[in-house]
Amino acid sequence: MVGPEAGGEADGAADGETDGAAGGGEADGAADGRERPGGESGGLLVREGDIAADYLERLLDIIDFDGDIDLDVENDRAVVAIVGSGLRSLIGPKGETLDALQDLTRLAVTQQTGQRSRLMLDVSGYRQGRRAELVALATETAARVLASGEPARLAAMNPFERKMIHDAISAIDGVHSESEGVEPARRVVVLRDA
Image (cartoon, rainbow, N blue to C red; front, side):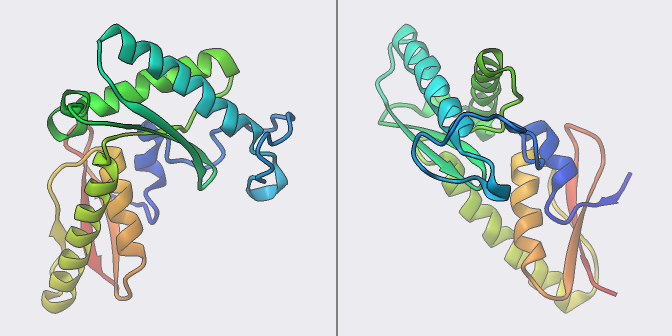
């Protein structure tokens, strides 16, 4: 089934990319003074980051890995990064271990807050680097589609990767993107605008 997903909202559901999932109307004030879009306080997001950091520190101790944990709030989401050397096994092939670790961390946060978490976890800059690769792929694919007029089907990707492609394509005039297929073979199709 093919459906338009400018911005990848439907894809993002499995990776927490949908809007309004984190925190709803949590009333505690922003511990750091930052305001969430729509006037809501960022207090819940800061709390999510703190809970995630505690969870990940305990996990790193159990598996005897060294890493520093950085916390931030970006784009209405808590962002937690584990930084250090020798952490490749926390990323795994194609980021699969990282995705699983992110899911476990979100569950730990949800258990304590009672709110679905959209927290984003990164290890050693993997997601940041992958984002740059995907933006380059989207740009190259859009140029090819604009030149040929033919749709381009990309390889199957996880929700995070599809969201990055959709976001990059949405910023390019003359093309748009859709997703087709069913997990785990769901892919992005880039098409020239009519």
